[in-house]
Length: 478
Ligand code: 5AD
Ligand code: SF4
Image (cartoon, rainbow, N blue to C red; front, side):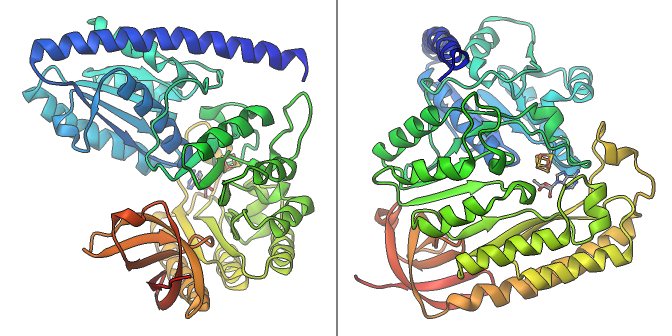
């Protein structure tokens, strides 16, 4: 490895040991406050948005636990509430504002409650300005780039009377030696890269998450090894565009090569990744998936639109034919593979014809499921300035038609495993007593009879009955 990485490693170690000292300082402070009030301090982290944020929240949780905070699901009883925000669509922003209104009412009865905000929304100047002005009770504000400095910010928040606001414009990689508390003991996300360089014309992510940086393979492999040794059977590699992994490394490495290395780790049973961009999906990647049984037969491949005109305006760098070619090649190499996607309805200038192209693409691919979104204008993105924004009623009508199409196609696809015996990773107990819920590698949900002792285990299950998007299964003894 070049010098650049050695320096990076040293800088990381130094940053980590500094933050570990702050955790210790926070722990002493928390202990003192707890003594004074005669009970432990309680905290709540609420996560909005994607898998990246979920993973970031696990890092925040790890730090809060190490500092001596207890965890609660009920934010109203917490002494410290942190919202890890998302800003990909406007309704995510509005949701946070609504929740802050509620928290303010709770805080009036409990004035010592500390409220903090972090995540993608905080990387937008106009939002921070609004919070400062209209939500003066928010005490701590930090962004996506300095998550690693949370211990230091926490100490300042507990010590100082004034607001603590720290937003950076450049990512410092999170030192992996800081504590992390996983939500699930049996599975985990692992960041392989941060940021995005694609600038899809509707998307705010490149502005709030910054430029793409890949972590080194050594760091990633070490983290996966540690997680597997600690009981993880499933790993999800995370990045905004995993298919361009490695391009920023001093010694280039492709995503397919990285997958090959991760697959060699003994004890790892399931490997997933998210998100793939069609423009960078290589034949080498298809080959690696086909050759390695550890890699799940599920591809989340956002298409966004079925119309070439719209795809060009979206700056996606592929057309419908190229997308269909990837689907065909993947199905040829991995016949049972499941496809899921993201679709945006009502992008500026979308005509009825463009929208019908999206509908026909949904039919043609046969997605196992699709996340469908109404286009949301994001300030500062090129699409926000485009003419011919589509009127709301038309978008809503198209959105409903798309939902119907997705439902019909997905139900047809989902039923294809009926009667088969497949491995299910049990993830949780079901709300219905006596049932547990898990997933097959294709990411389809299965409910089956069982109890909490099965959580984290991979069990063979007969997929007896398909009910739309999920199955009811019967465990079979092997
Ligand atoms: N409006 C609607 N949907 C969006 N997405 C990203 N930006 C927007 C936007 N401005 C969707 C895309 C992406 C997913 C994570 O969110 O479909 O794949
Ligand atoms: Fe946004 Fe496009 Fe980057 Fe995904 S690839 S985060 S949609 S800019």
